Length: 164
Image (cartoon, rainbow, N blue to C red; front, side, top):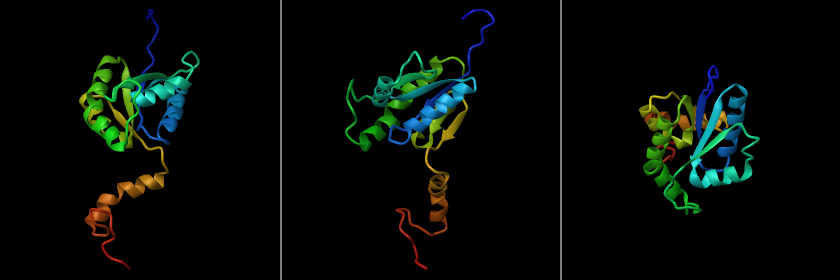
């Protein structure tokens, strides 16, 4: 990098690997670029392959990196349990390595369903921001579950405790 040239601050975005989660995060990445950031989308390898097959790297201002899942090259996970296992047990170490290797990361935006990434980001000492691609009402409903259980409105398995 030449003298006097400033490096753009980097923001890493970690999507949850499911329909309806990746595309909104890509839109956010474009908006962050418009504000002067260098967004880098760090997605599971099987999602990364799909994204990069459709993106023109010369015309895009978003960086893309793959987080290994342990599924093997070209493999798509069998089911959600396999994805969940990879997110909880295999991907955190790879994300941590990536964050320690990248210079200038000022924030990591984590899809809240990919919450496995939040402790990783905290260990790296980087601020994290949550991203929720669904309606706010959905988030409020989910975030109210512990209170509904505590007050006895629903059981631990989500069943109503009493009827009006």
